[in-house]
Image 1 (cartoon, rainbow, N blue to C red):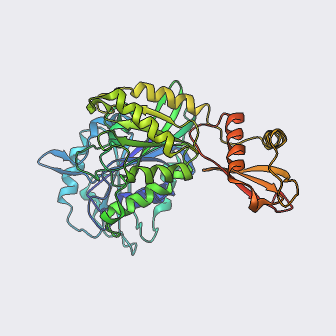
Image 2 (cartoon, helix red, strand yellow):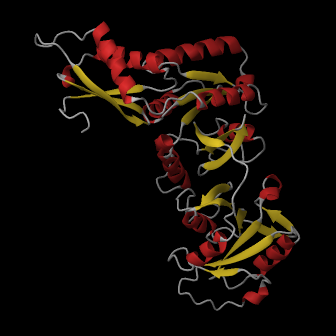
Image 3 (cartoon, rainbow, N blue to C red):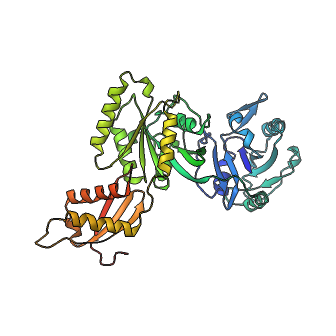
Length: 429
């Protein structure tokens, strides 16, 4: 079942969304209008109940403002209308609810900020049967909403393969939201020429060849000296960066017109060092005159700058006119079936043994270097711990040799392989 949270800005929709989904996906900020796109997540422990959070909805002059129902509404079963208990004047809410009745959806009324559990509001004004008094700030009444939702946690027959998660990173106005919309298949996310339109990461999904892909559009990453630490943009960027090591693949989206500048290099280096897998996508290629030369130079610069990261995938697209978006989907599908998440410890050690036998490390202080054991300790980033004597004196070129052998043996793509050497006696420490 799909539920849509609506109501005036700052009524507490995002707070209720975060509590019910047991997460902190949506930014809560004193500035009105923090939620600029709608968000979707399942209710905690109720895998088949989904809640959508929206920007504030105000209905005036018989028109719905600040929300595009056309893209979403067909999939919604019930509306959860959130109002502020402390307002006391509800003419606009009554008008809005009466307008929403014409959409033939069940309406649940949630009265938030009843911090003292007074419940002394004349609810007959709204003409709604299912009414809940709550306080998100004090977690009052939430269990009643949860009990109500439990009855609708029915089985969903249609199933897809487990989702492959993708997040899109980049500078403001690189076209992240436009690309996300192109992948999803319709205008799911607000786009604008104004930098910073996406103020928190937006999550949705699409199906390609019976594979489910979860996609997250993140806030544009500004330069540090351009952001106020108390602003929504600062909070948005912080939350965007937190998800890097929780996803399967990071897309570094670059505006072809801006080129491969220092800020792009910093963001990409961060993604390479923290992500499970990275893919570089140059957007707006349709605006470049000498495309072949631009593509050649871009590939050459990336290969030279990130020589330690093998097999980095690079695609050139135009999200706006859908050029090469199908190719991108096809590449993502291939990667979803190819990305190495966990290496067999026995195969990893067999590769280490073979590599060190074929090319032994130079003697250190007249003694042989012995590589005793290898174990993968992380996928984000891809990290292998190797137990050895002289662990602090392993030569840099030999570390590169071993990393390249692991990459080749296990067909590792789009990620940097980090090697950590230790002399601990117990390899499981």
